[in-house]
Length: 344
Length: 294
Picture (cartoon, chains in turn orange, yellow):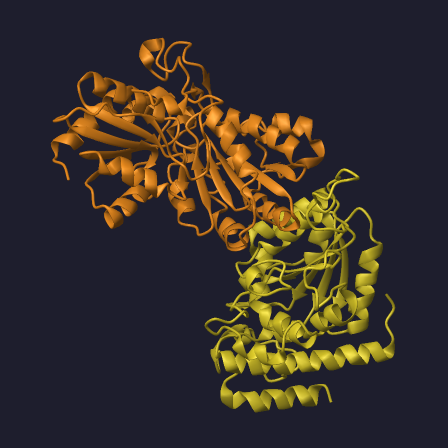
């Protein structure tokens, strides 16, 4: 059942058979749109906030910021290495730069610049990677970042955030403007269901339980940890599993680094089966982070749902979710398989 | 910023002492880079003893000029100069590259007061300097203290190597600084014609560098990088330029001051006897410096 403390939207399961890709309800928006709103709010709160983009004003949703604060908006042209390093210089001065491009280039192309000039320098600059994941759709493999969490999670000093919907993206952006450290945030292109509300708590490094397991004695219990917009499908899967008598908890791990070890260990401890779901390679992402945690602090069999060591391809977001095993039926089936392979 | 004969003599004496310390610290470190640091000793001496607005007692002084060293591998000259300028004791130079030392093999910003950035990976320093220079130009509210670095009346200097002009990131920054007309930015390029694998013009030709910069909307001043008066005059000229960043294209001799290694790319860097002076070479090299600047 939905965790009342998470204050989720009332209409998240309505219409379109509950699918993320069908009907007019639930309300939909892209996480990048939430960023666009949030960064304008952050700019109003703090004069030090500046925005840089590499020839992608519309795709990175920074047009509203440009209109509101033309003096604090920097057009870099198609030059992602310069994007990161100019941002680093601005942060060294005392500005709070949000630097935006597609995640395959930012941090994909400029990772070393981020490592040396932002992470080692430990300056407050926020790398915003748009069009992360399969939801990029028709642009194909070159533009679908599926490795960005792994590459950024490996960096000391770096905070890594993957928002599940536009409202969470807005809050994450506001929080990132205040955190005083290097941050990577990934955002998706496609409009997806808005699950959280203004009342839903958001704190960097604090995972939220969105779906609580109805625990009944003698029944198997599953703990699912997920991140990003695929969480909507995970909630639908949890609902279906509950209807079939499987007690399931779903935790939104929006901050992949630092990981909320306390919440994850607690939820994993009361489950028989532990599963992670992400729109990222199964290597080095959320699943990797949780595997590292559990294997060292509470050894637990783990099933990692994600992209299985493949690149993406062109197609509609819905088609790609199906092809790569992130559709609701796939998630349900994989969880059942995980339950049958034995428990801890 | 005029300069007297006595001041030139003083800077030349400092450059000689900086070179001697470079040899001593490299021998102690048993690794590092030799040719670039020796070649830039005159310019570093002129910067820290005449040109830069700085305060060794207060390295974070808000009004200081900012010096970004992009080609971080020549840090022995930076460390040696900072020590001679009083940032830390000269003996500390002998900790270069040692475990626990503040003088990291490539400079790390948070390890040592007075460093503006971490560097070493080539091609990223100029763009950080341009970002810094641009940030200082963004209008802030009259009453605001939110620009973070106090006074905005300073200049941003950036030292680059010629070799790192083979990096795409460098040219992205050159284009950017030209677009934003960053006249508060002064780049000093160490044009010493060598890189690890050989002569720059053999490895990946860079010329015509001055013309390329002019085409990117920069003001270019070519100088002899070992002539203190020319360098100071170039800085003076750069300070008068409006609406453009300035490049001081400094022609230098790698290894300058130790004739037996001058202009030899194999002395870019490495280990004892093959890129950095060995213990046996220490005295002959120091002797050579003494002779050169007698």
